[in-house]
Image 1 (cartoon, rainbow, N blue to C red):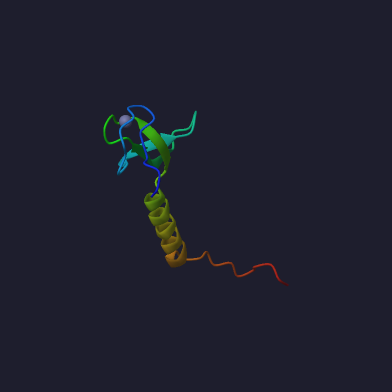
Image 2: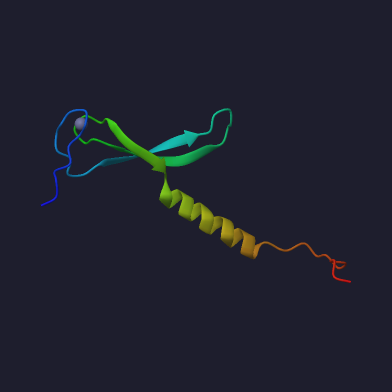
Length: 81
Ligand SMILES: [Zn+2]
């Protein structure tokens, strides 16, 4: 059987981490990134955090979709001559 996972702060067993959305930002930049944090369900101590993978994925899909549907600028004299 797998070793029981316990919270390093309160020592209670963790069956399921609590997941919360949070914003992350780079120092001295206004841009905010969607992130998630994982915390202990008993004492709410934050045990880990990362960039929100779902938001990153949907952002990538949106970016791709708009890139594919965007009108390309017409360049009649485009290079290869
Ligand atoms: Zn805890």
